[in-house]
Length: 245
Length: 373
Image (tube, rainbow over the protein chains, first blue to last red):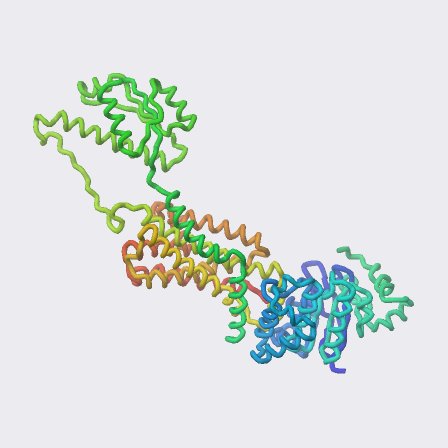
């Protein structure tokens, strides 16, 4: 399988505090890679380094074949990103948000139109195209934000707690969208606090106190730790944490 | 690059036009500020409350008091018998000034050819105190020369030659206060929009987190920043034009010099000012911080830029400081062009300084903006 993300001892220090310590892992094309950990374990830090938002302190990493130190602008052409904070413009309409993000990624006017129609019909939001994003319910906003992060057909999409605060039905729909994207060859790198979502991932890594404590498929992890579900796996690992929030 | 910029601009304009109350602000702000402020922020002091202690009760003392009250600057609020009572009026804020006419005022004036009156001024409001003291001294002087000429006349006019000054006021012939203050207020009007709105707009993206989304796109930071400048530049220019119309309609103020020069100077000014706003926004994390920083600088700019007080009478360090304010240059240029009719070459130095400041602020802001922390 083609490798699209690889890190080697990737580390981020903030003064004396080591937010992410010697992270080494690889993610293959089309994989759904879950990134788990308690609050403050270093998940977001790791993700921000890979997206070119945060300068690593040491170690190596490449994303979509480009170096995170020197080729961040090339990385940015090939990734989509959905942050913890909602990142669409609430004072623009649904269609205007799609148009803006598609436009700044360099899509042609005809592509923008095609993509907008395609995306809206996939989400079943044709009727909402002219509504301000601020008027949408949270679940819809999150689905829209995810779809917008894919508008330029990136090779990898980074999702930072995309389903926080979303109801179970919408979460399920959200994961349908993730599967759909992964099936079309997009690599999905996702952080989450929901253990049922961890079960949906091809592989998960669990971070504890800035280091990767475990990395395998959910099935293997459960077997290794003799746990009935991912919740128990997570609990066994996370309670060893010394760092408080 | 140009395509990207087009989409950024489109988004910024849509957001600006959609922001609530903007049109109201656009029309109301110049009108209210230009109509209310010049009337309130007026230097010519009128209605000074005067308490008179007349110990003489003579014809001369009454003539003096009458002369003072008929000047239009003073209104007599108390006519008392002793200083103590008059002072109470000052303490109660009923009087700004006490004029005390001593016993035998008339007698001494006629017999000994000289007499002193005492004036006590409430100096809490310094400018008012200085000016009202000055007015009063002028009136008493007038009174003085009047009675002297009255006495001297029989002997002929040669004996007391009086030198009087007849000043000619250039550029503002009737010392019209509005002519001085209105162009200045027009400048502060667009300062608020150009500097603060630019800063708030940028910080808002930080606060709601959309800036992070922009930072993971290949958009160049220069393009993003320029996209933030243009809409508020257009808005400020519009308010400026509306302001010019208002000052023409209400004060009949029109530029003696060319409006082209006025407009070019405005562009240079906004370039510098918006650069400064952006610079503030790169240091502020949220709108509250930006607001505090913005108002801190707005206060300094308004008080020190020569809008209300003369820069020439400031201490050296302050003069040097005002040299780095785009506002003080633009206010000067506005007065030069609108009142004196100065040409673009005559205000060239100020233009160059504003453009220079703009380059410094904008470059600093771009360098201080990091897509990656």
